[in-house]
Amino acid sequence: MSNKMKTAVLVSGGGTNLQALIDSIDRGDVQSAEIVCVIANKENAYALERARKAGIPAKAITADFEAGALAFMQECGAELVVLAGFLSIIGKGILSAYKNRIINIHPSLIPSFCGKGYYGLHVHEKVLEYGVKLTGATVHFVSEEVDGGVIIAQKAVEVRHDDTPDVLQKRVMEEAEWVILPRAVELVASGRVQIQGRMAVITE
Ligand code: GAR
Image (cartoon, rainbow, N blue to C red; front, side):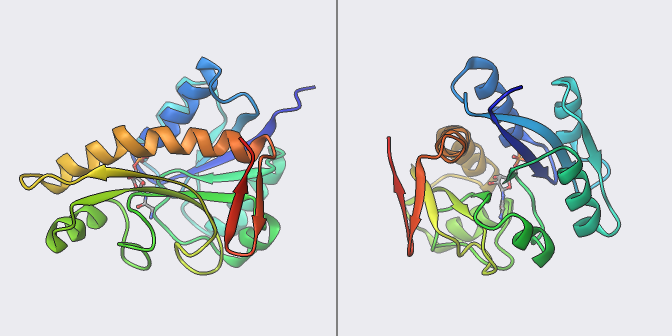
């Protein structure tokens, strides 16, 4: 039997972060985790196609997401939950069943440009509106406060004056998200992340 950490991935859309994780596992960059199921809260999420192509059990749950997702994750034996482009808020049932075992990727340097209403392309629109010169991505544990849990990894990305939200989103994904999400999954799955107060202490 595999001793890899059984991981459920929750998605809403294109699934490029899911793909980055699948590819990192295939390459052997992530060795301590395996994906046991992919769950979307949208019927037509392309991420489901990506999962099926990789031979991973995948389904969309559009009604009573909380109960359905929890049941499917438990059926698959999931021990860790990764929100990889999951654009909805996780409810109390999943939060308490997986306390400190849910991680999320957010496309900004938290605590900037995060919280309610800051998701997907909107984040990059706000970054450009404000005119900051640096943005990036953050992987954090999920807590009851939206985007407020303990931070595991961050990476900064340059903002250029002629960026559009789409161009900036692509740069943040390529330079930050697809790098730090697989790395954070490996760190958590291999037991190298300890939470001490607000701080994640990482043993490299
Ligand atoms: C990613 O940029 C991810 O960081 C963001 O949505 C996009 C999903 O892309 N997530 C959030 O905004 C969460 N608050 P993907 O489906 O191609 O991975």
